[in-house]
Image (cartoon, rainbow, N blue to C red; front, side, top):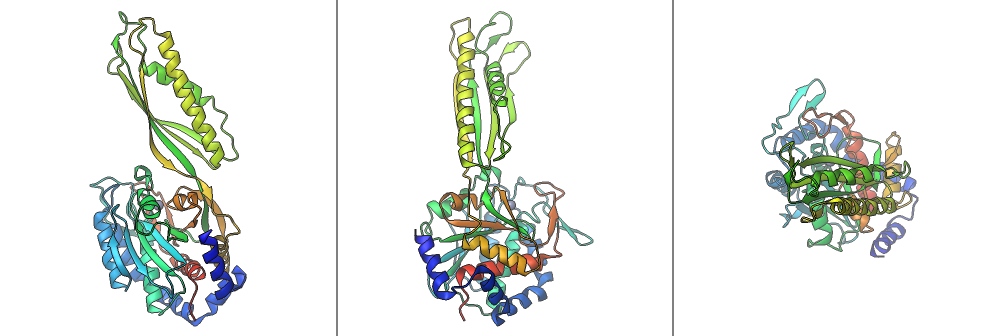
Length: 418
Ligand SMILES: [Zn+2]
């Protein structure tokens, strides 16, 4: 595979070293020390940048203004080819000695908060409070800080870096930005590895992608009077039958597998047989095969439930119409713990005095992982809580560790030119 050839070549020619030794050599190099000094002496400015980014609203499907701001910052930092692509992602290139390997360094532009949400940042002691301040204001600030550190330290790399602010990472966005980047955009088939900074943290290394499928189920029937038309197929009753089947599913604990009927709707009146009913269902599994099994069970459960309801109909009227739409799909999978990308992240975390922890989540990395592109998601330093709520906060203490770790992983992957 191209990826392994390129990265294998890089590993064997530029530094035939173990990941631990390579990370140590990077830390000891004057260029990386200069980059670290930049981080240490610019922490306040990086926080100011994060506040600026966070105060530009980026609701789902409304990321343009923030993308445009990021583009101007990328240009100011000497990146080239800065542009907004057809999907709305903001891209900019940092050319190395050669075009390959090409590493994506990304964070997501969008927040979960609807248009009109007040994203003004308040300070309370060490904490910054605002919706989206950490997720992913922290990651976007990291992209700018890393580009700035590389420039200030006059670092050159063997491979190239593609900086990307993605759209549509959160819920309904369904990874549309990263999906475009990797399957339809001009960089498709040219990306060798993918790194995402998402939220806070100095230890987390998300190398496993939590897969999910989301459905909207809609049922339509004739409707009628609850007494005089009794026996007509009832869409709400059919949903009830379907849910009863679904909840009997023996979801395994390992790999962790879950289902949730999160929204249900239907009917107009207590004494009318509804004409319509619908529900939204979220299926997840840490195992790709388990997700497929659950998915098949769910679809069969719906079909059988509707058939049963139709079969019970005493009026011989029109049977219920069933419509099942896949409204979200995030493929699962993993970047193996022994791949260079994960090993570098692990060793960098340890070398900076922290305890690395591999974990699993649903992030932009799901998409590259499903395409067999080495990918992982890192916290960009600091601490935070209450993500996806109006009470979200971020504490920048420890941001330096996240940024230094990010720099080390980027340079280990792209190769530091001496
Ligand atoms: Zn996020």
